[in-house]
Length: 262
Image (cartoon, rainbow, N blue to C red):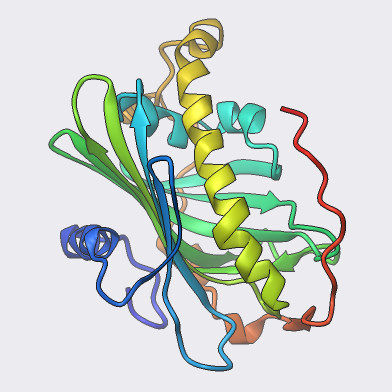
């Protein structure tokens, strides 16, 4: 990916992402408990970019099921309690599309949204799903949201047998704003582990749910099933963080955390 032109990731881009998911040099462990580890990486002082990585051992979950769950937008609306709105905008190739996602941030921060070019690739029995931010003229930033920037975000799913896998989540994101230190700490030590365990829990329930909701429809496996309109790359441009509003939320204090209903 160049700084200006939107491109579809090639094999080298996938290999680079996989390598970074597996590398532990230069990363600092912030959480390590019950088969789940969270690392952060210190970036340039004064920069608002945050980079962290989570890896979880998923028992009783196959790599194939994990791959389906992370792709299934309809199912995400059910299990992802942070999602405000998510939808696919259009397809680029058989393994690349463009989508919208908005999510709730910890109060009292403003909620965020993002437009991303997502691509995916099976590698033997393993899988990669990754994305980066793009701009589309039909989906400009909203007044009640902060448009965040995904520099590179995604998942590596490693098969460990018929009913076991490793899930690694790697995120390099600019949330557009000077965030208070408690947000960074809370994200690595509480929110990220909770989100990973929620994915694992969703996988355990997916088979039963999918049997009742269009069980044969999996366009990420069968591209001929897709109903998305084709989008030419010329309609997209790179989303540079510098072109977006930067807000200062560094002085906001943490509010009393609400317990999850589940």
